[in-house]
Length: 318
Image (cartoon, rainbow, N blue to C red; front, side, top):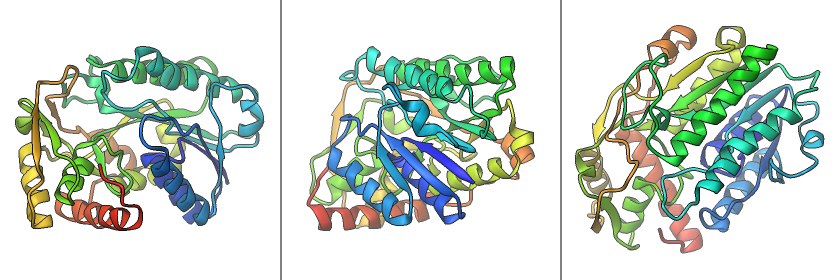
């Protein structure tokens, strides 16, 4: 099949693109190489994705000519987004890159005669301070990221409800692994233990709990969605780990695996942070037969190995 992946030079998107190529699909990736984090990291991702056999183009989803770029796509996996919870990122950027970009992509696909299914990559941030509920629970986002991702999800599902547009939305929970964004907890911890700057730890966050989900488990879920398109059409599905871990536990695990302690820098509480996430994946188990398989010990061991290689290759520090 002909698969389009947006955000294909990012963390999630690059893994999706490689997985789709490995499955034998013809894959085109789009990415705007946003400056939210260092461009060389995305260029490195892009190089790996292209080496795997994916055609990857630098394109902004809000720019003219998008219909030509998406023409002929049979599967679309929409992973492009303005991520994170940063006061340095304007609300306008979240609106443009999450909501407007999704709207433009949907419009570019409006007259498509080839599209079979659209997978929207969403987030547990939609639930708000505590992401522990099933999909039918009321959304209560507390960050600009969560608000705009909820709006984007509803744009996709509104098209599905109104026009029969074949689509689903996957709400991902605390995904980690190789190529993870450098502003996230684990890259900062690992980078600090490798000699980089101290990792900021926000007041109270050691007691926060998370459904840390290894990236390959998310890829397995996407594979299962594509195998069960008719069952997933119109659905919102939580994809994550149904075990939760305190952030402090994982900080200690990183230290144990690396044999050296990351330096930490205590920061004031950050507005919009989630206090607890524990993925309710009963629906994913029923519809997809999904179950996360990778333990934090194994997943973090792989991420540490990858970051050590990155440090040796480029000298980049978090």
